Image 1 (tube, helix red, strand yellow):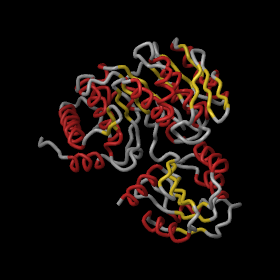
Image 2 (cartoon, rainbow, N blue to C red):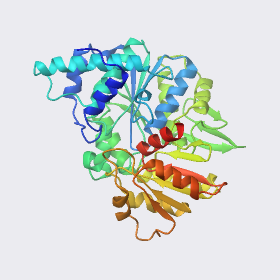
Image 3 (cartoon, one colour):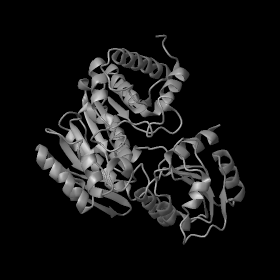
Length: 427
């Protein structure tokens, strides 16, 4: 097979189908593929983070802490906003396009050989192949630690095949019920399944129902959990004090905005304290990492724009809480969503905070059309001062025209919308 260049590798991966719609939950295929690739995941320590909301933030905090401590770190996240290379970071830097293409070619060739010998159940999916690429990239770079953000659920997610030694679970809420189950208990069970015998486990703030499921999983496999809610967070003279059993950390300002990030910072601290058994991570490294962390597309300001990937009820509540506390400017809401989201409930939370609303459609096969969004419009929310368009470029143009000079344009509802909007504005 001729080695693919970057554009060809991206085209090939996209040809495998939408990463959610074409997803196949299960571990046998990815395990077979990783074995054929030499099990690269066995070359370094791994942290896997699952949860409904906050898992990406915990990964961002932890990655920042490790970089401050000089730990050679790989970070694997999803989805990306602008370039697919964002998903694989080594020591804080995106993988190069040349390395991405080379690894995509290697994984594709390996998969083709396995398929020819009938050793795979199906052609590895987009997410499975990119996960394998990340694990190889980390091994090649000789990272000491890999931080893996779970894609969807946990029990059957491709990242779980890496068999991470450390597992963290952030707040669990309703999302992707068609894959994970209709109840909080069902969803919690899927995510708690990343915990295995020998796991070291950190648990973020949870409802009683979710916490019981997670603790039962820990008990079943003999894992000893640490609860972030057992720490204490207080404010004093504008400083945030985060206290664990080991230490107290005084932070001037978290690098990620919003009060909801406090609980994510607590989870990251517990992981970092556990990693002190392996690496020379100091309390000051933890403080500096919390302060310098960044997470594009999550409460991210760029000029008069605010980007936030709130795509479920929990995310919308966190965004609304932030806006009520910190924003006084008139808000224009640019909103788009995927077809598996509770749009009516999300709009009930966000729409009352906006003076103008623009409904649009991200360029994604899972996107709801603006007509479908309007069909799910909450009955108690007026459609007055609402605009609708079938493309994001026009939505941004409308937003710029109708927003007063002192106003804020909030782009939210989907990370895919955020990524597309950022790409348009960058160009």
